[in-house]
Length: 125
Image (cartoon, rainbow, N blue to C red; front, side):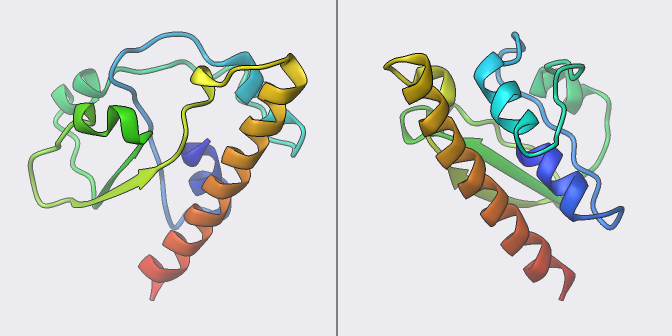
């Protein structure tokens, strides 16, 4: 979600790439709630953060988006990138009915969008 919002709201001034600790499958609830606001993630593939690091790319910012439970597992990228940690609940861990999971995921989606908008504003100054 953060990658999609950064690329959308950053409008070319920012190019975001995302990766996780363990590449897996896209969360269908996340895909659905993003589609609700016109962002299609259905063709995205999950990537491994260590695979991305191995490419040798450099980044101006490395933003980790972890829940508090997994914060200690968030990777550290060496180099000069400014490191920022955002803590959000992990939608894959939500419990309840499908509608309750969607409602919780929408809250995370909206919080991430807000955080991305603040980041873009502050980083652009």
